[in-house]
Amino acid sequence: MAILFAAMLNDALPKYFDPRKYANHESAIDGNIPLNQFKELCALLASDEGDAFIHLDFRVDEDRRYIATGTLTTKVQIVCQRCMGPVAHDLTLDLSLAFVYDEDHAKNIPADYDPVVMTDGDVILADMVEQEIILALPIVAYHEESGCNPTAVKYASSTDDAPDDEKPNPFSILAQLKAK
Image (cartoon, rainbow, N blue to C red; front, side, top):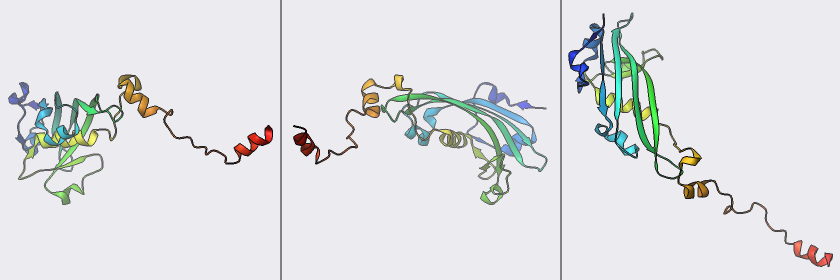
């Protein structure tokens, strides 16, 4: 029996939540978080516009672990490393989370789950979502070549200005004289 908390129906996500309570009631949460609430993430982005949508289904597994599975979707604007302009990047993450009390318990979590450490039994939802997005960002981002500034593409892929790999032969002048 899944319960969707009434507060979640209007996209009002809690700042803090107790995963134990949600798991014991087999509840779910859904909602949007504006990207501009994520300070660390915004430092990596070209724009802080947009929202992250999160859906989590909570349960207690057969080993009495507090588990949440769900999805996180967002569209972020990151900096193209070729033209230094913004490039849109869609992220859709499948989440499998296990909530633990400390780092020692996190070591015992199966590899199928990402551990999330609870502080005094609570988790700050925005911090958890922000870290998941940061971990999913590409290391280097580029537009398609046709999407970049034409001047930037010319300099990024041009071989006209590249130095020649061949050094002039000092005896080529002698060869020209001998030919005459």
